[in-house]
Image 1: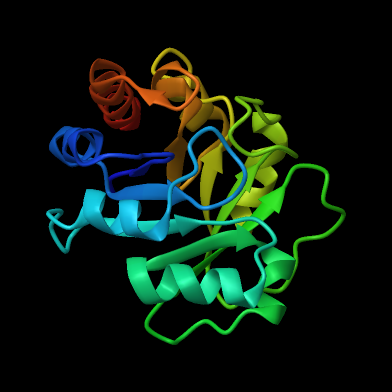
Image 2: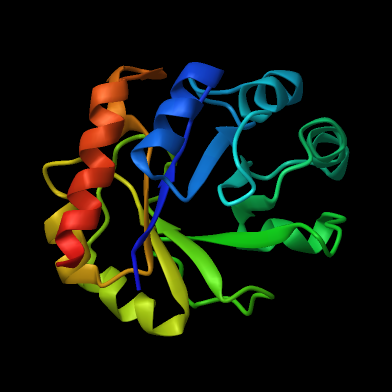
Length: 197
């Protein structure tokens, strides 16, 4: 099966279109404190034209239920990605897929309502690479999306070492904080796909 690729931290329709054209399976919009943060209106506008085959992901971290409901109402994402323990306090409708974030160093793998989870470092979007051999052990728990410090030049080794179901990139396809580079987006997706063979 083809590896799942998510391009995260997108902010405008041009870069969203580039991610889709490159073959990304999901596009992520950040609603937490970050240079990549967008409003629900901006995320909706940027993702209106994408095909139904590409998942639109709301990326949050410890949101209040009111913050989440504002994103849900305007952006209406396919997926909510936030720390695993956040879901207990959020009202998430059944038609929104849950992707819990498991952070490197968490003592135990929490029980989740999803077989897909994101594995990354302590600080999202900081370009911190996780221990890929440790991630490989986590990959046995479900469909793991590996995040943190990935780029076109290391994603093949990351895939071979950690054996994830998917990969997630943000800062690794940027020319500066929050500034996506269309060429790097294409290079990353190509490198991830090539790593499978």
